[in-house]
Structures are given as structure tokens and as C-alpha cells.
Length: 354
Length: 251
Image (tube, rainbow over all chains, first blue to last red; front, side, top):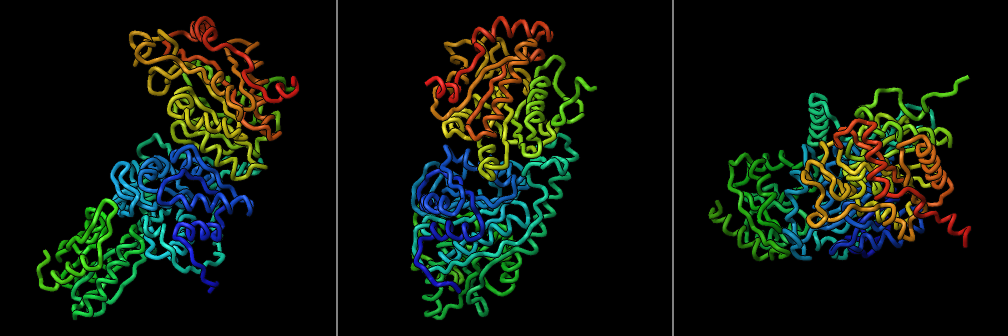
């Protein structure tokens, strides 16, 4: 392992992207993720890369679309309101089967909302980041180390499947500092024969395009894309199981909420309550099988979220509504305390949660 | 000896454009410029949303289709990906470039982005069936200005070339037309220069091509050309609006 350095989550994403071979970053400023742009602005010119401050989120994602069309690694980052602006581009990236990395360091919403951490873009990220039938690979880091490692992973998955990977972080993950070890990432050699780099008069022209006016053909394109999504659901699910061996209660949380939940679980365990956690690392593909298997063993589930309850719908669907799933949440930029989570765990232990 | 042939950079396929539409001429001029400059292997074109969306099938160089109005941003990415080897152009209509894509247009110009923009201004939205465009003339009857464009209600047309020429970033801005042989030849010269500028790393070039839409103007092709001369050209005078090189020489 490389030497550990103390870094902000946002900076870890930026440095990891560079180590993963990304040399093009386009973005527009928005709290709480601006450190990514600042880091890129400083680093990119020194290493022959390109940092460009776009005139808008809309322009930034379309600049990403341009570089992605050439097959090179490219990224943008933003926070919730900015991601809404990017959703047109996210849909086009999906429709044109282009690889890209997009970071959402979430803040409270809706509208301009606030600048404090949130997880209320879960639906937006996992159920549709724009118009049309499409998915993004959604990665949820829960430490600064994971901010870095999932950035590297995100680029790899994007190239592998020719689609967008989204890092779904939150203001806390972006701003907090932790020791992190960073290493040059090996870049796998994926086929890029589809890219537009000029024909050199040696091949037929390549076309990057999402238009398909014949409905039968467009339907086939959608079918094909969903076959790819099925492969991803089978092969790329990531999650962490924590103290689940003997658990009667399963807490589920991602990102900063999982950190809080771990503290609450330690406190509950000290009281003799058998509680564990499933922490989804990929929010799409969602760890459906892990939850389904857990439902065979535990009595109930608790979803800890910084939202009005979004991931809870996926948990309920995964356990096929056979076990009670309770929401433990704060919203609007607030974070639940371990004590709040502990209280819900205690209730569940009494069999009180429905 | 071949005295007239199809440009290599134009695919040998039927174009979908309406009879009398001037897109065909403009496509040909772009393809001729690419051929003559020998850049067909380096060129990457960006097609807009609008009548010319299918341009990606017509140019034989690598092509990218962009979201409505976003072509200059997409072109920015394509160019920045490999500034020394990619010759990047966009081909956009007036709705795409001057309405929904105005921000992308202005900022690409302000950055002196080293790309070439072919801006086709026919004062109407063609593909959606003839609605008022940002460049529709005062009084012009369209589907969404059925009583004529009322400037007290929806303002005035945008003079794109004049406006962009005020930007320090813009390198070369010229307005041309394709209504007669002389103007077509001049348009060709301008388009070729706009590509040459990019090859010479001189930065942002935009050629506004005043053109017709016989179908949605409700005119025969011949009458449409006459209407262009009588109405469009007085409002959109032809000429060079910005030429940084010429200005430098003059100084």
C-alpha cells in the first residue's frame, strides 16, 4: 500500500481520477463539491490534462459528452441542483452508450435547498437521471478511502460497460478529512473502436448518436441495453455485511448514514441486541439478493437515510414485503445521531417496528 | 477529365431535405472545404437537433449528434480531447444555435474555442413544422406567430454575427448567403477560411449562412430566394463582422 495522506473526500476523488488516467475535467462551481474543481484546476495543467470551467452544468456535461465520444476518460462533478441540470446530458450519454464518471456530492433539496449533506437524490440517481429507459452505475462511498477507490472503480466500470458511473456522495463525505492511500490505477484495455478520433481515411466513419427514428430499431436498442444492465446486476453488485452472522435486526445505510449506523450498532450490541448491517456500495445495481437472504434470518429491517425515505423502497422490494422495514431518517441537510438510530433499534428489538 | 464530382466528404446517399432547401448546397460547401484542405481523416462533425440532425449520415468524416443547442459544448470536448489532431465543426440551425444553445454559442466564442461553426439561419424552425425562431423577422408569419411576429410581444430577432463580433474571443465571424452563384462562391470561401483558421490554431470561427425554408415559408423555391433577398438580407446584411487577422494587419 502507498503511504497514507490526510485528504478531504472531494480531493481524494480528484486525485484518484487523475491516477485512473482521467485527463479531462469539466465543471461548474457548486457547494459542497467545489474542491474537486479547484484540485483539477491546479493539477491538470501540470500533467498535460485539461481543466475547463464551463459556463453551466449543461455545458459541462456536454463537454464530457464530447470527450467521452473520443473514448478518453472524462469526468464532471456537481451537487444536487447541478445534477438536475446535467440530467439531459446523462440521458444522451446513456442513449449514445458513452462512458463517463459523474460525481454528485449531495446537498439538501428540493430546489436550491441548502448546502448541508443529504441523500435525497437516491431516486434521481438510481431510478432515472433523465428521460428515457436507462441506468447508471451508482457507487456510494462511506469513507474518504472509498471516495478514491470507487472513483477508480467507477472509471473502470464505465469503460467496461460503455455507460455512466455516478459517485453518489454527500456533503459530509466531500468535506471530511481522513487518511487515504492512493496508488496509480492499472487501466484495463477496453475496446474503443467505436470512438470518434478522425477516420484517418482508414475506416468508415464512426457516429456517436442517440437518435433512432424507427421504433422497432429503438426498441431493440433498449432491449440490448437492458441485457447489458442485467449482466451488471449479476456481476457488479457490491455491499458490506457487518455483524450479520447472528443478527435479528438488519440496519441498512450507505454513505455517511452507514458511519452513524455503525456507532449505533456498537451501542446496541453493548446492550445485548443482536443487530447487524448491510451497507450497499452499489446503489444500482442494488444488492437485492443480500437483502432477500437476510430476510430469511432477521425479524426486521431499519433503513437509515438522510432523506424522507428513498432507499427503503428498494429494501422493501428486495425482501418482497415479507418483513417490516422501518425508516430512521433526517432530512433537509440534517444527519441522524447514533442515539436516534439506537432508539429505533431498541424499538425493533421489542418487536415494536412495523 | 472530371470537371464536376461529388465531394469525397459527402456520402453518396439521398438527402432528406425538402425540395428547394439550401441545406444541400451548404452541406456540399462544407464537404468541398474539407476535401480541399485534406482534413477528412481528422475532421469530426457535430450534428444539431433540427432539420440537419441527420447530417451525421451525410458527412463521411466521424460524426457526433449533440443535444439541442449543445453542439458548441460537445465540440469543445471533442477539440480539447486532442487539440492537435481533431478538426472539429458544428453544423447548426437558428433555433439550435441562437435560442436554446445561445449560452453554449456565446461562451465557446468568448473562450476563443478553436472550432468551426456553420450556422444556418433560415429564420424559422423547420423540423417541427415552421415555428417562430429567434431569427424570425418582425412581422413574419409562422405557426407560433400566426398574426406576424409582434415585436411588442415577443421582441426582436437576434443578429448573431453582429453580437458575437463584439466578443474579444471570437476570431472570425462572417455572414454569407447561398441565394445566387456569386454568394455561393463567397460562402465557400468563407467556410474554407473558417476551417483553415482552425488548422492554423487561430481560434473561434463562425460562418452564418442566410438560407431559405420554402416548405415552412410556404413558397416555391424561387419565391423563397426572392423573399430572402427582399427581407432577410436587408435585416441580416452580408459581410465580415470580425476578422482578428485582418484587424491585426490593419493595426
